[in-house]
Length: 396
Image 1 (cartoon, rainbow, N blue to C red):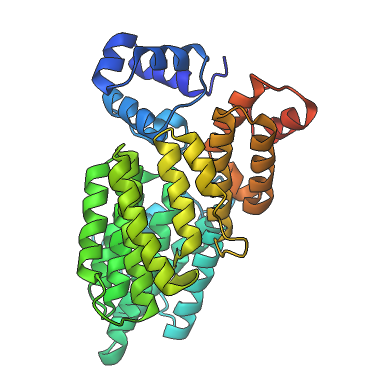
Image 2 (image 1 turned 90 degrees about the vertical axis):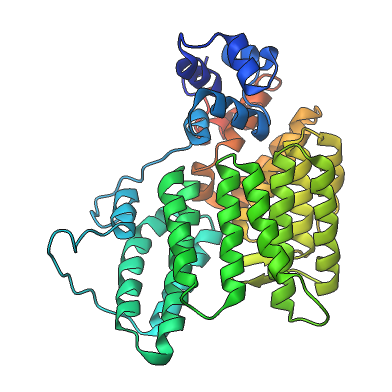
């Protein structure tokens, strides 16, 4: 068995403290699922099931699926450790006063936009080199701000904290990621932009989702949405922020296996998208018909409703505007549904397209494609699949 598989990790974390049946009972999953995962008969399971197993083992799901990463670099001012230092400075406790150079609001805005562009392109390693100085420089900008520049400076710093938190999630660093998003929220409260504040609350909900805190995730997202519920004519950006929050609540409901509640929220979001008339990007967040389809597929895949997921995927607008990382993730979700319904060649085709769309950097930090390929290898060992498996680090 692959020594890096989920089954190996479950067995290691379970140790002698729990039998397979005890683990299954505590997690609320079938003992057959635990047994097949440990024996290699299955390479993965639904996100909800894996989260339950992780919780029963008292580990983070990132530890269970092997998603934590370091980013080795010859540059001491880059990497995850450098980001942690930038998030948690202790200069005041050391009696040091390092004078960081403040940047102008225009330069700060360009730095934030560049960071978000790298994020939506899946360039996580690049981000580990630009986030540490970006955080320290924008903090200096906030400290130097006076009068009318205070609010916009804080809003820029909030957006930089926000992209830092999102990046750390993809690197499997859930604790510093949550610290970053809470700092983003606190900093945004010092600004004047209520839509920015609401959208960052939606990102808090996403991080809670990643941690398996589904009810809290849904609650945070829908509370934020309730505060934005449109009445009468409102700006498209307002509708976009509201719809995005509703979709976040739908995703959390789906992960909690409340399929009816999730699809009801998806329908609400779909009506908002129809009112907007197309895909939009506001406050670093995408919303519109493409996002509604993407999350409908996610809801169905997470509840193992694979035919419904494939039916939903067919509704993806041809000229939609999902960012690269989202398009690649959607293709990976679709590949899960194709694999589980026996359409193995189409599943591989979807994964190869995801590789081209997401790029090597994106793919390196994704576990889902590796799990799908491990399942496909049980059915098909032709050269194209084996070559792809080698490229993404799956033993053949």
